[in-house]
Image (cartoon, rainbow, N blue to C red):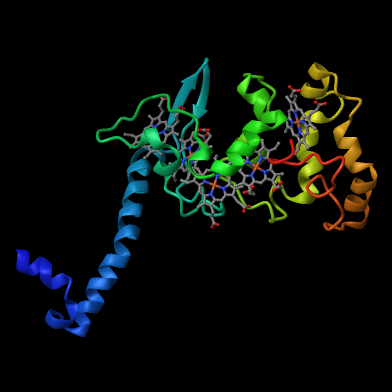
Length: 219
Ligand code: HEC
Ligand code: HEC
Ligand code: HEC
Ligand code: HEC
Ligand code: HEC
């Protein structure tokens, strides 16, 4: 036994080139095989379009289409790497799972967020405060440089405006409508540049200085 194990570490002397190739192939495929199996575990149940749950009297779907993450930047991240408490020896997993903690992998973004005005409101259990999902999405998260992203420069005014526009929840309850953040962006000098010329290089909230409003590091 010891001898066989040993031979693995001395492939040159014991294994032919082809055997070495096979060995490397298998070793390099192992993660792929096991990752497919991990997600397969979830799809034993979650590929059923009829999989539902009832929360506060409302029926919510728990069906996840097998290719749900294909377009996401997270397509290679395992289901169980985000939903850590869904990974159990014996199913079923707990009925109520913890919300995904993005900070497991995005520590800096999370620290910056928590320091800012939104993160502080979030920690004070302000129900209007945005969390990661509100701005980035869930299974559909893509990088901010992608024009389809809610956090793409051109789309930021709409994203922020969903809460800060006159009449929306935040402007109502915090009386910060005089800041009129959406208007500042869409009609203010920067916004004008953005929208009317379509120039992405115009200062958005990411790169203006005094009136900087974006995103993790500044608010
Ligand atoms: C044996 C079937 C089964 C397997 C396997 C399974 N789930 Fe579930 N899952 C369910 C059911 C049923 C629910 C709805 C539970 C309820 O609310 O009654 C659910 C709910 C969930 C929820 C929502 C939890 C919440 O708090 O609302 C998530 C997220 C989830 N599953 C993720 C996963 C992941 C990730 C895997 C694989 C690692 C997995 N599940 C494997 C049956 C399963
Ligand atoms: C990048 C992290 C991430 C990955 C990877 C991921 N999820 Fe999710 N998932 C989320 C987030 C965020 C939510 C919203 C609820 C929450 O915060 O936990 C969610 C919600 C869910 C729900 C609740 C129903 C719903 O649509 O809101 C289920 C079920 C679920 N995920 C299953 C899966 C399965 C199965 C996979 C693998 C194919 C998977 N998830 C991969 C982040 C992820
Ligand atoms: C108010 C909306 C908002 C919230 C809340 C938010 N983000 Fe972001 N995030 C953005 C925007 C807009 C960008 C792109 C512009 C920039 O980099 O400032 C971004 C960029 C990112 C990036 C890529 C750049 C980087 O900093 O690494 C990551 C990763 C990220 N966010 C993760 C998170 C996580 C994790 C959370 C929760 C802890 C979160 N975000 C909360 C709006 C938000
Ligand atoms: C298990 C680790 C893991 C978790 C948990 C996770 N992510 Fe990611 N995320 C990644 C990886 C890996 C990448 C980079 C993928 C690539 O570059 O191909 C990424 C990329 C991103 C990006 C794009 C960064 C950019 O440069 O624009 C954003 C935004 C993001 N994640 C947000 C989130 C949010 C929000 C959550 C929680 C709902 C989350 N992530 C949870 C691993 C994770
Ligand atoms: C889900 C709703 C939501 C979204 C989306 C959102 N915010 Fe906020 N924002 C809040 C809440 C709630 C507060 C109030 C926090 C407090 O004052 O305690 C706030 C406060 C602020 C403040 C401080 C205002 C002041 O007068 O104190 C600024 C600046 C701000 N947000 C900018 C932004 C920008 C820029 C975006 C887009 C990237 C954005 N917000 C997206 C909910 C949101």
